[in-house]
Image 1 (cartoon, rainbow, N blue to C red):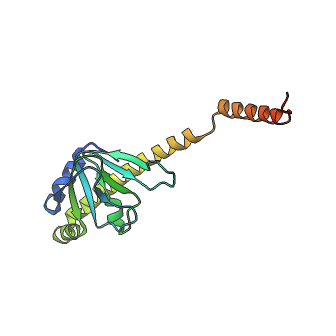
Image 2: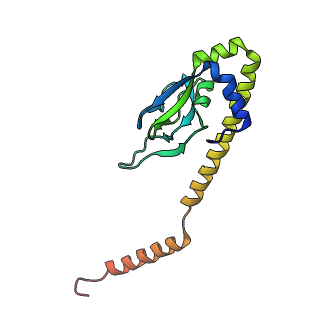
Image 3: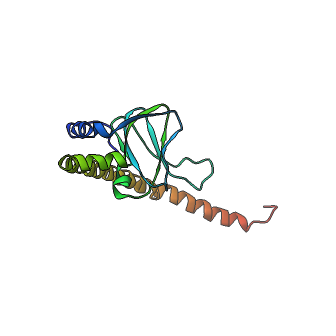
Length: 171
């Protein structure tokens, strides 16, 4: 997710302005929920939004990312006509601009040329988000690889434990 508005995004926001509504969310309110059909997308103006997934571990948060002003949320799912893969939750007070599927369709009907420009911008945004997600995934995979020093220590401890298991109580 990107969080800085570049010139291309400013142009995108100008094109979408007539079709957006401002929506504010108090802390911990859900903008959209994982597994629910996407009927809109959001642009964060103020505040931070947590992107989360459920986790089977008790007392473990499934927070994938925190995104802030300038971030686009949910556009991939809405354009694909699919369900959201994550939940988006306000992490404190959040102000957004929301484009629902009705406004989106109206924009495409009223100005198809502009609609193509917006689709290109959203495709660019999706590619940027995908690159960032790949980078985070690569970091996670690298950090999950075994540490040779720890592996050696565990092997030595296991061997020592086996040795102690054969000792009688008096020893």
